[in-house]
Length: 185
Image 1 (cartoon, rainbow, N blue to C red):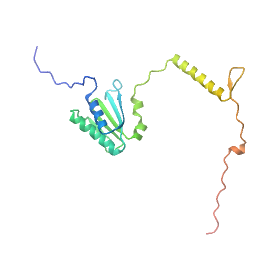
Image 2 (image 1 turned 180 degrees about the vertical axis):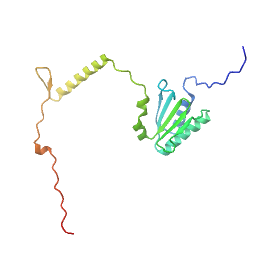
Image 3 (image 1 turned 90 degrees about the vertical axis):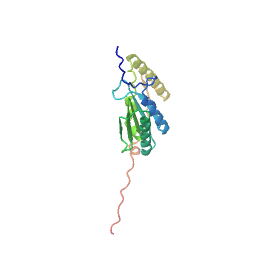
Image 4 (image 1 turned 30 degrees about the horizontal axis):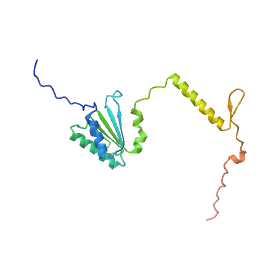
């Protein structure tokens, strides 16, 4: 056996989470980021293991949060791979090893809805569960119709009493008379 030194290997913390994730969460907490969400995207893509989404209260707050994430990442030895969007100020992306940090204004976050895009998909509904759900919905709807004064016919269908008809004249909005300008000037 040779006694060659082994190359240095970056090791993850014992929890199995990337070190950059704890650094990003600490930086976001330090700068009082709003509505922080961590989404595990392992198995969904090859770009990152985790996406961290956070909001700031203003474009200046976004830049300060992103700068703090970069500053703390560098201090912990996690060199950022890229920073995008600081000039625009609505959405700043900090790409750390295995972690992507998105800091957005609330209106931008609501528009793009990244949480819905990347959160795990719910398992598909089976045919039996769909039938049971539909039957439960039908019973609920029938109960609501009965409560609204509906009557059951001999065939088993439910009918709802009709509302009185409005006359044609009362249902149309009345048009305002056109204004006339005085002649002369």
